[in-house]
Length: 327
Figure 1: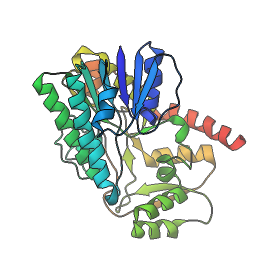
Figure 2: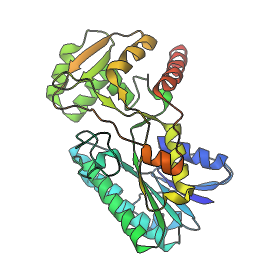
Figure 3: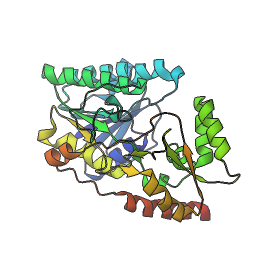
């Protein structure tokens, strides 16, 4: 099959490209920056999703589109660019794919369409009301509506995947990781919140700084530790490939992620055993992150079977951390 992967230089996109090539598919990447890949059976187009000319080149002779590319930000000044990429870009790509005769279009949405951080009920199923509270979640919901329009019009089969938070196992214990650094390490979290302009949070975190590197156990304003899903990239790839080929996926929306959420109160002591760093517990303003998103539908319908529970992720993360420190 000839497959177009948008976001081909990203964490998930690059892993999907590698998996597709390994299965003998012909793959075209599309992203703002080239991947540098020289694999047989691979070519790429660079450009913006909202650029109709670049997108028209990208969909030529394509049988399936895996639309993984997006602009993710929670900074107010990024909103205009985010809407151009995530909404207008999805519209341009879906129209071009339909006109080119693409048979299957898989759209990477997000749990923020529910939203996960303030659900009306848990576990969160695909029937949960779609009421995003972030601009990013709104752009993903609008993208879903564009995709559903094409499914209704009968021009191509579509699948919506509401992504869990995703990490490579090697990132989990890396202070410099974009997500795991601020999530689990105190000083990276301070730097992140400074960049966001959250001065009240910065003051709380700085007050908790023991004067040396430490982990941070984040709790909400009532002292409840955070809970969320963390899914290994390879499990996400499995679900994406199933959605590309499985006949029962057409016209459906699925939560894609780990089966069980991670309670930070349980995880941080395990993390600290590998790093030797102390844990600082911090109560932060607001309700905090505490959710459980169900993946029952994709498991039952497509045979999705996550293979990377947190204990396995931690073992690989510890190995990667040891290798970084030795380098």
